[in-house]
Image (cartoon, rainbow, N blue to C red):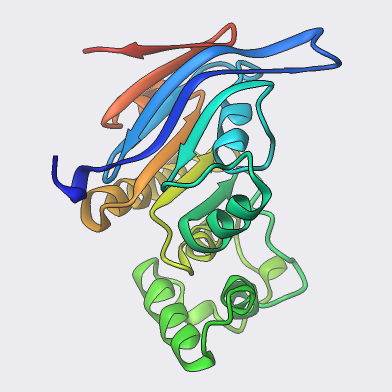
Length: 227
């Protein structure tokens, strides 16, 4: 297989529980994600979708099982740091932007974290915001822009360091129908045009059905949904 469709993330026999094992969230789950794929983790609230994203992104660690993301192990601290700074982007339902900062200032934060030269960072910011139609908002504070604009800023922030894998946790969940479709369309474009692997956690079937693959999450287990 060519590098363009290389496996970027592997989950093998992973389990995760909370409350000293009394609350089992994921049970012996396995998954592969390839470059350029838009994969839906589809299921109800509380089914384990977010937990799986957190494990992939190194925000949590499994009780048992193996993980590999972009050739690194998110269970290992030094690998987690490299993953977050260089290979992964996160988009959350509640965008997690800094409300008192401007759009431009929010986008400079991940560039500063990895020491990107200022000129290169500014060029990247301009390119990303033009792409999502927000270049005219660079000097506006986040608290002064709409919910849909904030989510587009959050996607730009996730893309600042050119990640290979984008993890999106219900990114349309707090948006109206029209704005949600626009945000989802941007995620589709990133996978198809840029070759970024996107793992999208969603409870909305219409978005899941528009993805390349649907992986149903139910009762802590995964099952591939075929047409």
